[in-house]
Amino acid sequence: METLLEVRDLDKHFGGLRACDQATFQIETGAIAGMIGPNGAGKTTAFNCVAGFLKPDGGQVSFAGEDVTGLPPHRMFNRGLVRTFQIPQGLETMTVLENLMLAGEHQSGEAPWMNWVLPGRVRREEQRLEARAHEMLEQTQLGHQAYIRAGALSGGQRKLLELARALMAEPKMILLDEPSAGVNPALIVRLADHIRDLSERLGLTFLIIEHNLDFVRQLCDPVVVMAQGRVLDVGAPDDVLANPEVQAAYLSGRRT
View (cartoon, one colour):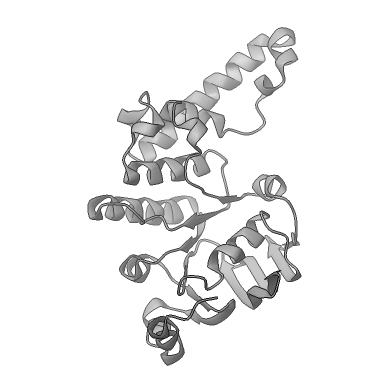
C-alpha cells in the first residue's frame, strides 16, 4: 500500500497551549483510519491543520506525495482531500438535492455571464450535476429524501448528507469528524456500512475522529491515539486500546 497522507512533527500553538506537539502519523491509500483520544487531545486541531483550516507552526503535511503544508482549504479540496462539517444553518432551508448540487465544483453557471454566452453548456453541466447528486443520494440511501429541506433531516440523516456532499467532490480522502455523534444505533450501523463499502468499492481513504470506541473497533484500522497534543500510539484498534499509556490517558481524564 502507498502512503496517501503523512504528517510529520506537526506543531500548532495557541498562545502557551501546544494543541499539537510533534504529532506524527501516516495513513495508507484505501485505509479507514480512526483518531481517538481524550477531549482536548489535539485531534480536531490536527484535522484542521491537515485540511488547511489552520496553518501549522511547524512540521510537515504531505498528501499524495506532495508537500501541502499550510495550503488553504480550497487548494486541499482541489487535490482530493475533503473535510466534512455539520450542514451550515443557511443551507438548512435548501433541499437535500440542492445541498449536493451546491457541493459540485467548477460549474460554469457560477459565472453569471456564462448563462448568456453558453446557456446550452451550463444546462448540460447542471443536468450531469443533478444526475450525479441523485446517484450519491442513492448510494447513501437518501434518495427518497431528495426534495425535502435539509433542516428537516434527523441527526443520522444529516451525517449521511455530509458524506454524500463530500462524495460530490470525487475525493481521494475524506476527513470525518465524529460521524456517530447524536446518531441512533441503527443509523450508526448504516453509516459504518457505507464507509466500508466506499473504501472497498472506490478505494476511498478515510480518517475519522470518533469518541465511540465500539464504532472505531469495528471499522477502523489503523487507529491513531492522541493525548496532550502528542501521538501516543498508532496501530490496530485492539492493540492500541490495550496499551497501558493509552488507558492511562483515558482514565486520568487529562485535558489540554
